[in-house]
Length: 358
Image (cartoon, rainbow, N blue to C red):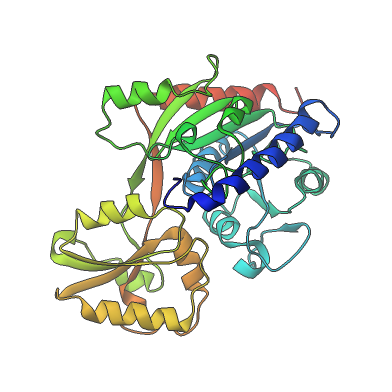
């Protein structure tokens, strides 16, 4: 069985494979056209639905590139209520561009962030309206075969190797595991700090990896909590989690690593999991307040992810004491086995050699 799913779904996975294989065949044989642009396009994506850590890896690429290049990020804007092409701006909200693009645009106001479900049109619009753009990051674009990126980075969760998974809806794969061969770089994400050399070698030998593909392992690095609302009052607040009770709010695809990180460091924890990209309501706020009051510790806080904080920040009706107790925990990626410089050089070299003025 696949991830607790019923075996009844397995025949549907066979149908899904036939559909995705046929579509990929049309692109591989050039019956369907792929567009290639005269600007570096870096695709970052996965073949697993959710939970591979795509957003912090996109942010890593932005930090790496923006010092030397004029960077644009193009996303489809998942769950936004608008259509067509839009730039992120000062007045943008989740309904306009989606939560992840909004998070990135606020975090990196000096880059271009745009959304369009039609990626070819989106790239053309960026290059037309922002001709100074040096490099475009295509967010979650691995299945968008209409664009042929110059560099494709594929993410795979350490705990959920694609070679041991199944196709939707029985498993979590958008397309068959063998299609990892389309990637130029493979990243094994959410790797535990104490991973054994045996487990590392096992992952490296997984079927579907081409001999020439660079492979890197990354893990998650959690930073100090940041207040969602009352930033001034919280500047003097210091945390000793071993004395604190935490209500943990997660609306992400795979909250387990975040939960384990908080659980092992705090005195008491209540976890309230919600679905990925969950739109919080006042009813949810009532549940959070109830959980906060249920904690037995004197010091009590509500922690959430940065993406959830973007959605919670737009919700009216979050009052004291919850508003001053609500924090998000930023997350960054770290490269294992001293491979960060090697990865950085691959990205910088590609972007530099393929600039339009070259």
